Image 1 (tube, rainbow, N blue to C red):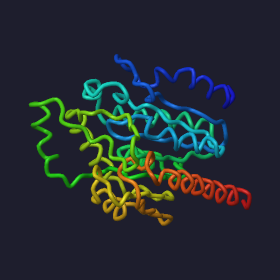
Image 2 (cartoon, one colour; image 1 turned 120 degrees about the vertical axis):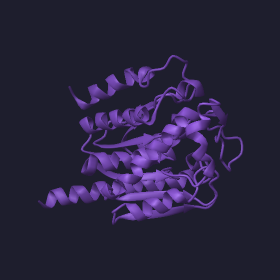
Image 3 (cartoon, rainbow, N blue to C red; image 1 turned 180 degrees about the vertical axis):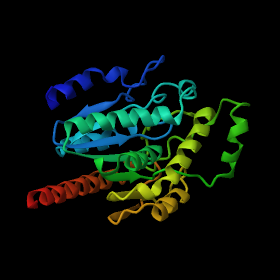
Amino acid sequence: MSALSRLVRRRAAVPDDAPTTVDVAPGAEPYFAGSGALGVLLCHGFTGSPQSMRPWAEHLAGAGFQVALPRLPGHGTSWQEMNRTRWTDWYAGADRAFRDLREDCDQVFVAGLSMGGGLAIRLAEQHGDAVAGLSVVNPSIASADVRMRALPVLRHVVPSLGGVSGDIALPDIVEGAYERTPLHAAWSLMHLWRDIQDHLDRVDQPLLIFKSARDKVVDPSSLELIKKGVRSTDLTIVPLERSYHVATLDYDAELIFETSSAFFQRLASKESGRVASQ
C-alpha cells in the first residue's frame, strides 16, 4: 500500500480516532494533512483538544510536512468521559499516530503543548532515534502546587473541580478545553509525570522549548526538571513574552510556528547531508 493510500485511509477513519460514547465537540476533531517525507506529530494538552493545535498543524502542513494531530482519548467530548480514561490511554493514542507517521515518512518530529509536550518527551524516551527532534510549548511534567497532594483522596470525594482552560492573553480566543477538571484523570496525570521524570536521561534528541513568561497553568518546575534531566546537546529555549499558557493560540503563535518549522527543516537538511556523505 502506498503512503498516499495509507494517508487517505487514516483520514477516512478520523471520526473514530479516539473511541467515544459522546459527540465530539465542534473544532475538536483530529486533523491529518500533507503527504511529504517529513512528518510531524502534534499532541494537545490535558482537558484540551486538537483545536488548540490546529493552526500550528495547518502551518506545518503548508510548509510541506505531513502532519498528524490526533484527538486523545477522553478529550474533546465531556469531562465525565475523560474521567474514565488514564494516562496510558492518552499516550497510546499519541503512540499509535506516531507509528502511523513512521510508516509513511523518512523522518518524524514530535511537538506538543502542555501535557502534550510531556507526551512528546515520553515518545522520545521510548522511541529513541526514531524521534528526529522535539518542539514543545510550556511542557508539563510536574507541578509545585501542594494541592495536587490531595488528589489520591479528593478524587473519591468529588469528581471534578474548576477547570484551567482559557489562559490566553489574546482577547476573544476560544481554546475548546473543558470547564471542569476531572480528578481521576488529574490523578493519573501525576503518574504520567513521574514516569516521564524517571526516564528523562534517555532524551538526547534535538529539543526546542517555548516557554511563556506568564503561564498560569504550568509552573517553572517542569522546565527546570527537563533542563536538568535530558542529555540533548542541541537544546534551545525560546521565551514567549506576550503569551500565556495556550501560546499556540496567543500573540506568539506565529513565532512558534515559524521557528519550529525552521528547526525541523534544519534537522532534516542535516540528516540528508549526513546520509549523502556516507
